[in-house]
Image 1 (tube, helix red, strand yellow):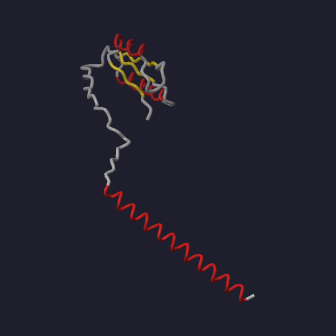
Image 2 (image 1 turned 90 degrees about the vertical axis):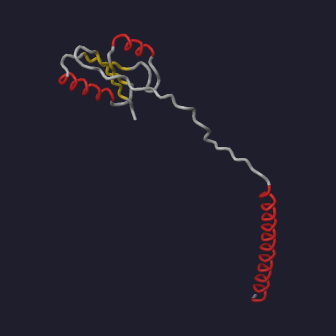
Image 3 (image 1 turned 120 degrees about the horizontal axis):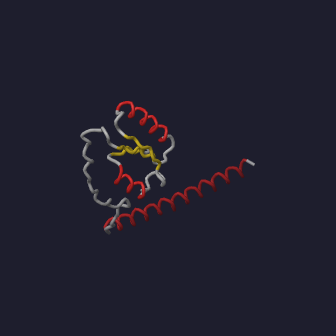
Length: 134
């Protein structure tokens, strides 16, 4: 029994040495291939690309007075923005009793434009406050 174990151990040892030699010689081949490829030129492209240039727009001019003006409070549909704007409306009406505040909810969802509302505000509003989520 002891002799079979010794023979088995020697066979496994020889097999391991042979496999490690073939692995090492494979690594040598990989290193040689790496040296050859180092001489060639590789072009790498940035996957992020280049963003388009930004168009800067100036802020709207401030109103010289709030008296007699119409201010639209626009809800964009973000959860809870309606409650925020109702609180704004209460506080604004107390602070500016001679100003008209008009709460509206956009017909479109969040960042999407609402052309009908924008056209209405261009005609009727002197200013607007929009509650944007995030």
